[in-house]
Length: 283
Image (cartoon, rainbow, N blue to C red; front, side, top):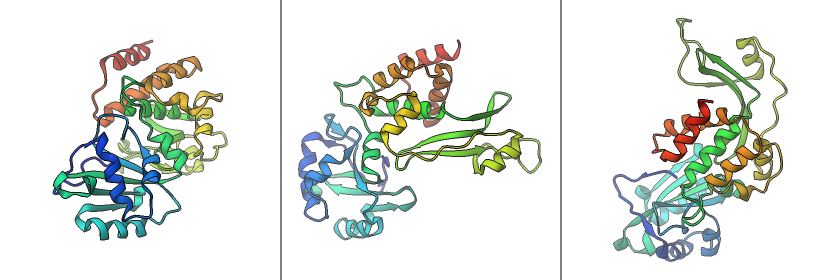
């Protein structure tokens, strides 16, 4: 998930059949068995013929600094990048243990294991016509659509009280606003997190009681759909979008949030997805 983190030490895509040997080699040096790492692969790793990197879920109870030092002792300092703030470690690992085979980027993602598997899930080729990114960004838009309050100025969103989807720590409820610049004439482009009291004073509104943060996939599905569904029913873009329509969400709002998310990421939007969501926004 860290992209190409090693520009000075290029990595390559890994073949599906090379994954077991690579994990087996890692298991010789780390406190994780090959089976444990394989069962905690995230995203599409192992589901498609090749993978750009391998993402492995790590329990938040594992000490990130200790694992970082262990990885440095095995791989070398120039092939390990620790991101404590994001609770991630990026590494360049020799494929099947041989530098002659090249290296693959392996990212170690810390957090609640059940949540990580849900938040990073990506279907295989036979399960969906679209990459997992299109499913996950749709879920994020659905989560955002469950906000308690929105504040707009000239059609620009300048304040929101509501839930935000995080890959590593579940769904957190926050009050966010775009503060005024020093000249008092315009707002800054970036949102800042404020207290409920600060938000209410800034916009002159009263906000309902803010729920607590949630990390269980079951509870997140309940939040966005308003009813219980098995989290596995949201494992593809197609099934997630069908449930969104079936459960009566605000489709124009979800579509607007969804396309904004995809555009902000700079990804190519499949024509059929863009057409349907733009059509709903025009209703």
